[in-house]
Length: 586
Image (cartoon, rainbow, N blue to C red; front, side, top):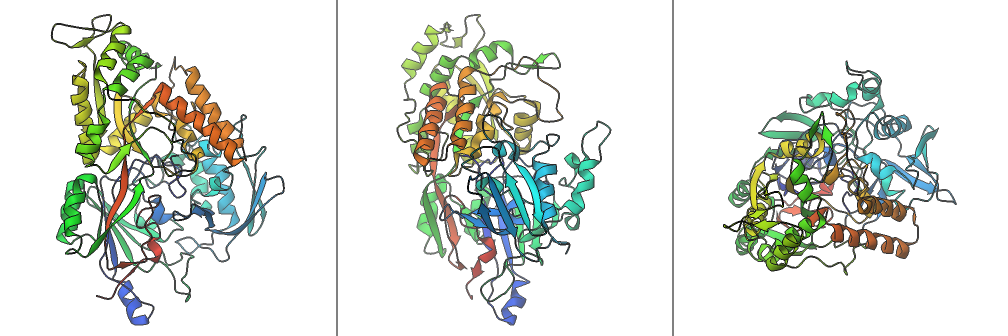
């Protein structure tokens, strides 16, 4: 559902990324000299929150450029392919995988990348309970929720062992490998609060030459609210068929542009070679396609989800309820959530906001996934039914048609989303208008993305929000959302590691059942039986509405025709194979 490898365990909040290649390359020495001056420019909506791959919870993040794991998923085929590992072998009972690393792997500082780095990355980072990581939930196996055992076999082989069948076993080994020689002491050393120093290491103030990586690019510089510059990693392992080192392009620049409208203007002016095409831009760009010498790629329904959610956490922190008690009572009333779902006009969203380039979203699992259940039904737009539901639950209307609860509290709540994402801002504005039709006042406020993420994951200070997750083919990638103890169980979040405890948090029966089904689905090796299990999770998610799903847009991107080797996929976008891209001779 949510997280594909290279992005599999990060809270992937969907952002359009615009990419430009300013100069090109060839295999001759003369053209190689031009590579050194070539540059790719992308536009991202917000500053990164961390340069620490283990702690990252959001997108955009830098790690698709800077790190690789043992394996990666090919977005064109959905197949798992070798990355740092050149091969792997399963045991007959499917409970062991032995990976063989490639020869002569190196870190960006020239130090050898070895099996010891792999064992360290898993045992001391991802599997370390002292370190909050979204990855750990996706690695837990079976009802015991046991974590894999990772052991060194010899100088070029590492073995992963689990205690019971686990269908996404291979997929779960695609996490970024990090350098032991830099990070080991940061895990062992503790701060004044007894927490590993690692938790504050490699923040966004880290100089580029101190961030040691294994991916195609390394960090060169970062200026807050302006840009991030990456430069080619000279020790990256991939080579082309002629033996030339990849990537071809020397630098990648991320310009931090806080509005998708500004990105569009930059693309139309020629300063960008690619832009994510949101529905409101599609008609304009389609008319300019030939003149601008670019192609709009349409991958069909996008992976990922967009939804509205209420804070269902009934707990308190330091003696203060996380949510105002009478509002918490509304949010935890299933029929209140159903009334809200019936009051949101998704047809209007599709026609006005998405310009017809989308469809109603009725499932937590991506439409393109083989586990998607097309029989799941969403909630029809019916304000009269919504009012009837609310009245039956003890709500009432005053003389001005404002909705009140049984204790005469006006029904009013704050709705948040990330500023700069015009689609989400439009969705929030429409929801505010839609709910006015049933007497509910919505205080809609777009806020900075990093502030929003902090509220959802740390302070838990929010009432309702609109957000999105990236998606994938494998549903177990979403277990950190659907497990009640998951690191991204955001509608009823438990405290993150190192945060103040929460007293009185409650987990509903249906909530636990969905989590149990995700465990069961990961254990089942028979594909058809797995589909049946995940169909149940989708039915329960729609019945109990912890997330109110909105619209699934089409996956669209405009790319200048001078960029060669584009393999567009809704799973990976236009630039998932960025190290292989070339520029036509101009």
